Length: 254
Image (cartoon, rainbow, N blue to C red; front, side, top):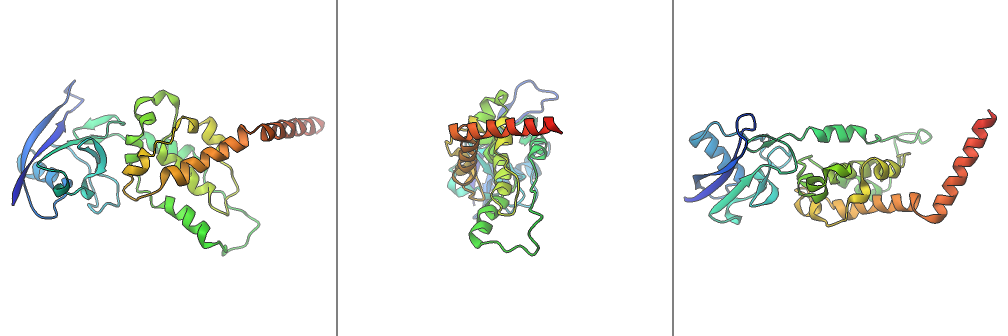
């Protein structure tokens, strides 16, 4: 059994203006993950430490943190890959509640704004769907809403005034847009209301995703291409303008 130094960020915003990192010496065992070490501190050294966790199996997304400056799940990050001194901080993109616990509730409001899956009504069930189409949308369903992609996104983190919803929410929209039975086109909403254009496809969100979702290549880029084709292509712009004029003229006759 060895030992590590765990440096954990501590702050209660209700009573402290500034936070600090506190070092704890923690014994280690084979196969130990960061969550094990943090829970050891809570159980054996300082029970006032606040952290969030649930399944301890990498499927609930609760134990998100920044481990050695990288957004990661504490339950999936092995101690033996990090060295003898490990720094654990809360996600910096969200308001701090206490210590390692952050307020991610704003994400639920964004998710509710995204137009929901709206299936075709002219196709009888059960639907017959090609396997390639199933795999496309199935990938996005793997999201565990850990919000690590939101945390690492520099637009979400440093330019909150842009209105950019962030990678998790583009994935949500893409999961519906790429379903062969969906009838909506969410590109206008993403472009006008979700700040899609502010993403500059650095792929940092893909790098931290614990479910290995190809967020940038399979969700964000296709949605950006769809928005460009629909709203910035000159021919499409002319066609849209004529269609709106025709609709307005028809409505005026009624």
